[in-house]
Image (cartoon, rainbow, N blue to C red; front, top):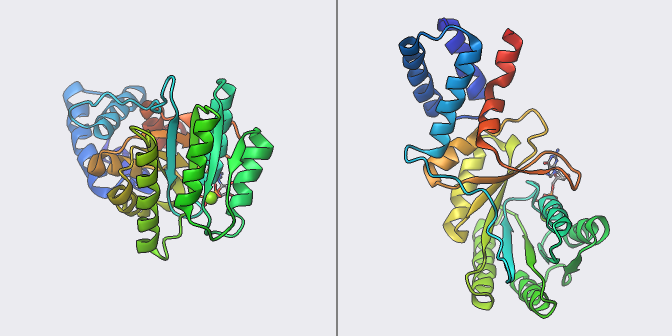
Length: 285
Ligand code: GDP
Ligand code: MG
């Protein structure tokens, strides 16, 4: 474990979007640990790097992470999806609908992105055609809060188990979008006790450091309860979620690994942090 090894690791982690200060902190601790334990082989050092990164992710007080979605047993669960355009909200809703339906749940979708052309049809395509669940929709340009309201009424009268709410993501008009999202959230809070049960912020792993800004913006208005990190099937590693977790305390709950309905998985911090630097060590062996 020479100087060069730590320099390589530093480079690999920074390019995986783990912020510079976090990487510096890690490398320093790692060098000490390696010296202290007199670690010489890569197998052992892998273990230590993983442990340290999971520690950084989970924080000093080792919050035991409850990544499972807050799904009510015998009551309606409402999940609100937020995030900028193109991150994968609609696709993730389709995937989650598929999963929940496979578990025997009655799922309903609401097309709250009334802004982007084709967004309603896209949700319909995923929900109605691919997964076979109903989509409550209004026409393009209508008030998203009104669609969500109708979705809730439909979910209640059909005694559905889960209502997944899609929303718009145009950040060009941030103030309007945030007002719209607060209004949607207020409607949900008013119509269903203790709802929304989850507010999931969808982040695209390929956006790098910008994801932190998105997390700050959305958590101010919508009280985000968890993150869905998408597009991890590409080259992006999504190391930025370490910073998001550290700064905002928001845990990652799900990860997206492709464009098929089955490409959604529960977040595993150990496997995730290992993925941040695994390539480097595999090349070495
Ligand atoms: P939205 O604007 O947030 O609703 O994003 P969409 O759901 O429309 O997704 C935008 C694009 O990203 C689409 O082409 C999706 O197929 C793609 N996408 C979403 N999730 C993933 C993922 O996990 N992996 C990959 N490779 N593509 C994804
Ligand atoms: Mg969409």
